[in-house]
Image: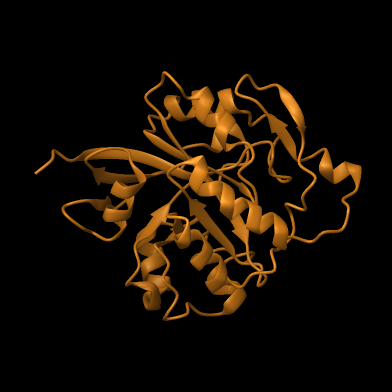
Length: 249
């Protein structure tokens, strides 16, 4: 059996691409803060887009940090789903479909200029023209199916929040929805969440930062017991398989 060890992860981090993110949350700043916090793995999950993920991956080259590309997708019910992928090749078809399903009306310049595209050297390369603050014309089950079809993990984001969460938007957790896990916001602990959402006890719960500014990165985080920092290993941990597991926080 392969040796298993602990890996600290924050799989919900935004960049300056997200309209609600600080313009200071650039690739090199993200990598620096993640390493300062002792993280082994992060995921870049901007709203409805993965356009800055490759730049953060490039900025992490030569470091000990593993960077997964991802998105925080908004469904037509205005539910946020974290989508985390192994590679950009896995993410890109999902991104293309989400772009196709977002509102198509031209955005005002004031919003477009809040959707900043950057390279690995933190240089601005442009602005995303897509309506990243909008909701895709896809239901929650359709979003989860799309993510799984590309080999990604689908995790319901910040279920304890009153805005954009599965529990508050739908009022319940659909019994047949094949989620990989549930994320708790930094404002609640997993034990409290398990008590508050007893009907969700069959799904693993994780806590990530949902960082929109550099200082929030890694606060909180989730530890996984894995053989290596790979998405396949995280998937096994979420399923409590072959010794891999989520370590209670």
